[in-house]
Each structure stands twice: as structure tokens, then as C-alpha cells.
Length: 173
Image (cartoon, rainbow, N blue to C red; front, side, top):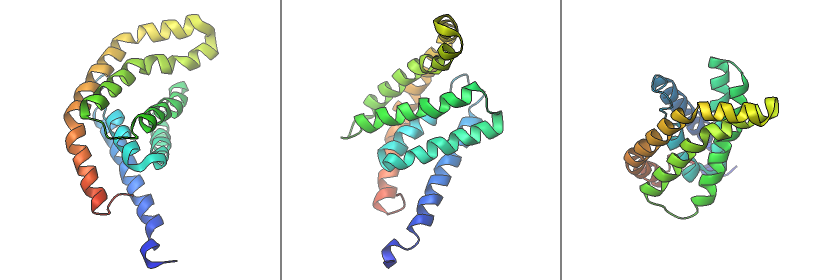
């Protein structure tokens, strides 16, 4: 193995583990705020910088959530909802975008979150159950939308600058 590639696997695992721990710790720290989270912001940044490797973070995060809070129906939602965000950011992030663009994207994702999470209820009980579950959560989706917009608009520029600097220094993947 060439010397420049030696230790690269360990570095990748370490960076992904730290990123997973960060997203999980922030989610737990903000749990008292209804639908207030930095997960969306971090997954946007991770996707822009780590591309496909972000999926490791997403699924490790979901696994940690299940281990701490239990593996209920909500857990399966985490497997596809965050993957949908990853896919959207992957498609939209092919060229540089301003913070406002990502804030609107995050807000829209927050608004759609409840609808996306209602899909398993459709399989369990049809449209009536899915629709009632989604409608009951609309106030939380509105809060999610507002919080995502504010947090991404505020924190995306400095964190994006930090990630770009770390990437230039060879500290990211």
C-alpha cells in the first residue's frame, strides 16, 4: 500500500464516527425543543462534503437512536426520511449554493417531515390513519420548518467555511 494511503481507512472511520456522535449528541441536547434539531443542518453539510459516505452517518445515527429510545415504527422512518434528505441534497448540491437556498431546502424538508413519516401509517391503516396522523402533527411540522430555516440560515455559513477549511487541510475525507 502506498504511504499516502496508509491509515486512510482508520481516518475515514474516525471522521464518520465523530460526525455521527456530534449529530446524535446535538439531537439529544435539543430534545426538549419540539422539533428543534441540528440533524438536518449537519446532514446537509455532511452530504455536501462526504457525499455517499454520509449514508454511513445516517444509518449509524438511526441505529444509535433505536438503541437509546427503542426500535419502534418511528425508527423505520428515520431510515428513509434522512436518506431522502441525502438524495435531495446530493441532487441540488452539484454546484455551490448560498445559505438561503439551503435554509429554504431545510425549511421545506421540515414542513414535509410529518407527511413523509405518515407513510408507514398508510401501510398499517390506510389513508385515514396516515392522514389523521399527518394532520395532527402539522403544528410540529410548522415548528420544524421555522427552526430548520433559522438554524441553517444562521449556522450554515460559518460551518460551511469550517468544513471547507478542514477539507483544505486534509482533515476531512
